Image (tube, rainbow, N blue to C red; front, side, top):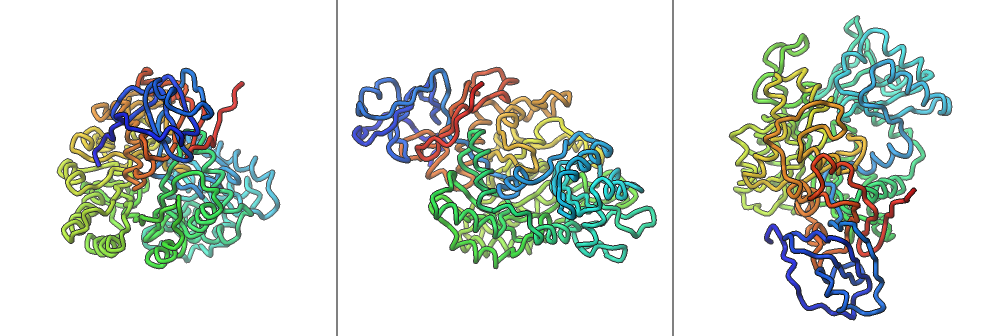
Length: 560
């Protein structure tokens, strides 16, 4: 398939047309001018100019969008819909710029409205606060603010946790508990007692006991709620990036009941050092495959190959800045060797399953590419592989992504100056830290780019601020000054492609969505402005007026 499906006029069966959309502009993948889109049932049957209006039945439903612009329904190639749905329905959202005192105040306000003994769950605190939250006396303050209930608060990367004494007790974590493989329990001044901050895999025990206690939220309804939020931002397809069995079962249930109003692709964890879900690996894949449906495709696994730079768990080719805990030559490590990863990917490729591999350091990227090279050499040329995040890629490896057919799954909070980038600069030499997300270099070398929100790690799945950041390399909120490696900026058209057809191709759903062309589903977002022609610093303000999925309106913006 070519990169830009053509929209040349083709004969249509006019009698089949049941709905006609008319707008100031209909975005076609080859840029051909169009103002009218005709659909029959769930499918697009024609796209063109005003002449189409004369070729369809008089009784067809006509939708006048006025000065609006129609673009394909966007595809979010990296999110966590069940976690996000639960967070939106039942959890505390913490401000990312809050200090310790403000965080404790937010906890106290939330705790006041909870039943005695109930878990207080939430997240969003700045990952740069690891040491501040582990400082002497802070755990006692958290316990008091929370009313001595169990507390589980994820940071803005979802890789680290701030927990209360009650949560530590329920998970059996004490002064005698050793650091687990792939994780670290930050200790109090005595060097033994847990200080309430759990890094990476150390949080799994608390996540599991919290999940076992439950929160009364129905999984399918949480997913439905999350999909509704995606609709409000013009998103009609998504790839969940770490899909647990409860999520897979919820999607299967919604699909079977014809209540799944989005194209859903799932990625089953091979290991889960972040949320601690079970089962994982081969057992989860075996149980997932029968849960495929008309709109749900369990066609990927997820591999966490390293962690994140602020907790010094990303794997780099060159050392971090020195610190007392790691010395002056710490480079992080990968969760698997090249040989181990190759074995997993080969076995999965034989089953027709691709992989989304989390890599934030350039050494983990190299290990991943070496493994993919072995899989390609074994003859699996069509298997989809995603480099998830790929914040740092060595110059020598840029061309390998395109040569090996690896997709770059991009992360919006890191395309521009932000607290996350500041936290990386605190542990990685600034000159290296700021050479993050070489998006222009990747595109120039032929890599397919796909946009994912990483919601709820990022507070909202709204793609438009992120797309502006791709174009400007500046903070779309105006909070952080400057531009981050501006040479890596994309054009608006390139950014929109990465959120539509590029993301659909990456997820393997471009046979049904991703472009406004005949033969694809009638998935479209109705915008108040054309993101390709507005000033670059106004892209973030794009408003979605309506969203249609499979020929049916699933969202309309309330006015006033």
